[in-house]
Amino acid sequence: MNNLRKYKLVASLSMMFVSSFAFAQGNGNMMDQPQAGGSEVGGVTGKWQPSLVTDGAFDRTPHVNRYVAWSMPREADVMYSKRVWREIDVRQKQNVPFRYQGDDYTGGGMFIEIILDAVKKGRVKAYSTVDDRFSLSMSKDQIFEMLKGKTDTIQVEDPETGNITYKTVNSEFNPDAVTRYRLKEDVFFDRNLGRMVVRIIGIAPLKDLYNEDGSYRATTPMFWVYYPELRKELVNFEVFNPENDINRMTWDEYFENRYFSSYVVKSSNPFDVFIKDMGLQGTDALYEGARMNEELFNKEHDMWVY
Image (cartoon, rainbow, N blue to C red; front, top):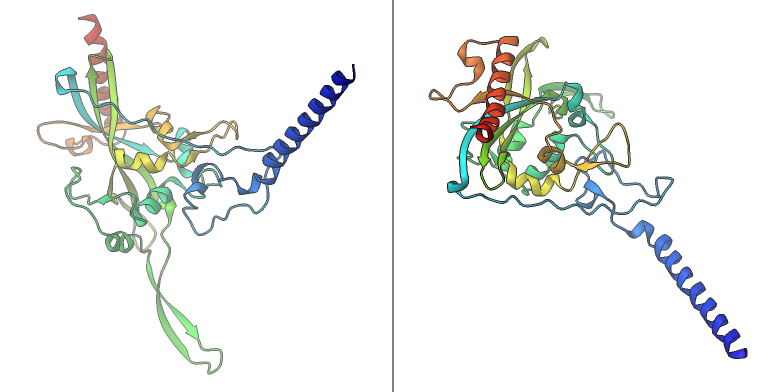
């Protein structure tokens, strides 16, 4: 009987020790754990700073996200292929995550700032827009020159002498000027999978240009980014979910699952022209893009029926 009591006492003390150790590990090291999302690679803007305390009502575990590499099918297994170009308009309601200002899980910046941060730090290479074949890479100096805002001259008064001097300054890059993104994609039918597969090849931010009087002038692509290379960066940043703060996904998952809204602006053709260059504007161009998109859908259907 005494041996049984001793055994129960030792077992109770052991459980108390293990519980205390687990509690100390779970709380004492809470602030030392790496945060989820973009904070693992640092904020993408200088405005974002990580919290110095536990900012939340519950203990959030680090989100370790990894992307799944694509399987490259053989050319012999591809029965049909079509190259298309799409545009994502961030002003559409479904594309609101592109305009979210950022937090500690999204990297502290908008989507364009995530791309620019990766390009500036040399983790992703930017390519010139002379073509969309990634044939000419851009240097960091060219990128910084492109990001320079409007040049202005301001007066600077010396507080001691009162002399007035003039200084030339450049305004900061405005991320809100990027209103669209152009995607270059390959759509192909993989007979091993028995379905159409869409692979994004490149992404180009489109920036709005304005005249001196503030009127809209044009929209131009800034640079091209090779998407398979960009995926390694997008997996570190999470997309804001307006419906549920705890249920998020990475930008890589967002693109791979096609949660964005887009429209076709070009498909491979003998003259290599966009829909707008065919004399179609406005709703007519949208209808033509929808027709091209429906052709791809019907092609997959025909592969099964006939």
